[in-house]
Image 1 (spheres, rainbow, N blue to C red):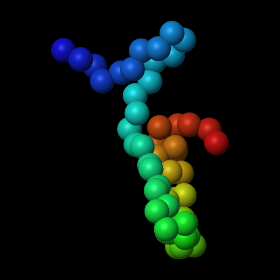
Image 2 (image 1 turned 180 degrees about the vertical axis):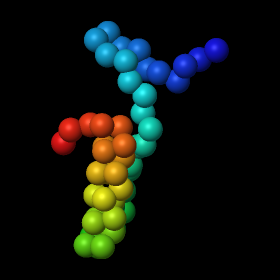
Image 3 (image 1 turned 30 degrees about the horizontal axis):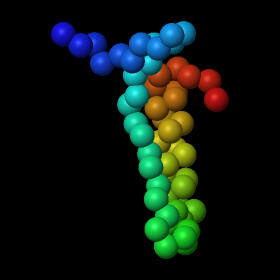
Image 4 (image 1 turned 180 degrees about the horizontal axis):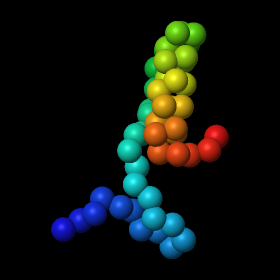
Amino acid sequence: MTSGLRHERHSISVLKIHLVSVTKYRRKIFTHESLELIYKSFVEVLERWIFTY
C-alpha cells in the first residue's frame, strides 16, 4: 500500500496542488479579483495546515 508521501534524501513531502499558468498569447490572464481569490485560498490552506508565511 502506498502512503502518497514522496521520500527524498532529506525530506518527506506530499504535493497537494500544482498551479501551472501558461501564457500562450503573452497577455495578462489574472485580474486583480482572481489574484485576490487565489491569495485568500492559499492563506486559508496555510492556516489550516498551521504553516507560517
